Image (tube, rainbow, N blue to C red):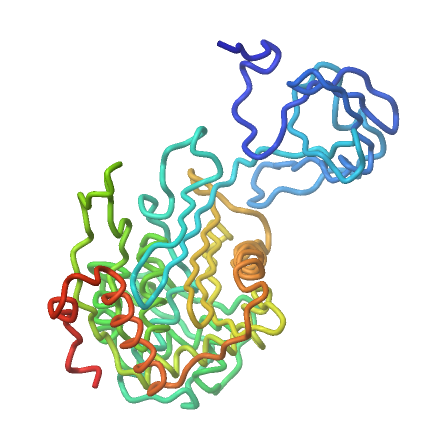
Length: 424
């Protein structure tokens, strides 16, 4: 049995990186030895990003230390470091095993199949699945369902709503004065623009008008939370949920207002190709009208093309989604979709603390979504979001196709799938 080099044995898994030990340092480069006993060079230009974070008493956000001028500002001989190869032979770049964690979920909204899931940086480092086990505040990513509750209450995407400053007594002698992230208020604004720009004041005024009960109903039926407290602060996403729950809720909007329960495993066969498990059929549940779902999709598409979610944009493709950020930048979210895929991204520390000043969902999570979608959509023809009637036809066709592909020997029983009458 191969034993690990004792120099590296006490070091945690570097994930996708390689471990190396610093053998010799010069002003502009370091000579390193890798775990496989090969040698390499680490130039100054590939480590000068590693400026210190300086935490000072009483300050929420760290300040960045001085610029790196020589290798000795970062490394010393004997350090065990994480590196990755560059395009130059034998030349490496300094990497960092992150303290921050994250998760991603990819769903097919028509079938509910979970196509991909990442629960953290490294399974070897932590078996905790942050996609399903971690409950965090969704922040602004929850606003989508505030505006959805308004549409269900009779508002339209172009209805004018207030974005004026507001002061609310949330407990005896305790006043709440929420602000927009820009520290400005915008008077009367169309509902769709308030979502597009992720305004904070507008959804609060909105719920003041329609009441909290429509929002509670939406949050529960979309599966975001089993119980939303009747408190105005919940409008800004203070009620904790999981990434899978929130991603599935967005998937229902993409699916014309119909939710299909996420499925982990479709079927299991033994080595003799005998079926030993098959996921039971679940009845798709209409949660809102196709018209309202489509209005929400178009509003979320505007958020990507013109609004706070612009960092998620993949040129040439139709995407929609919403950022999520919480107080003091503790949590960063992006939930978005193409015409066929819905993707949820979360970034945050396991022991909650600030990600850093202005580290919003748009700055941190949206680029991860963009990177994934760039690969997922590579070589594919751009596909716009289908209007309600076309969406209905596509959805029924996908059900019939999946059933007919299951087993050609089922005969008439193959078409016993229940299609809710309310979608017709």
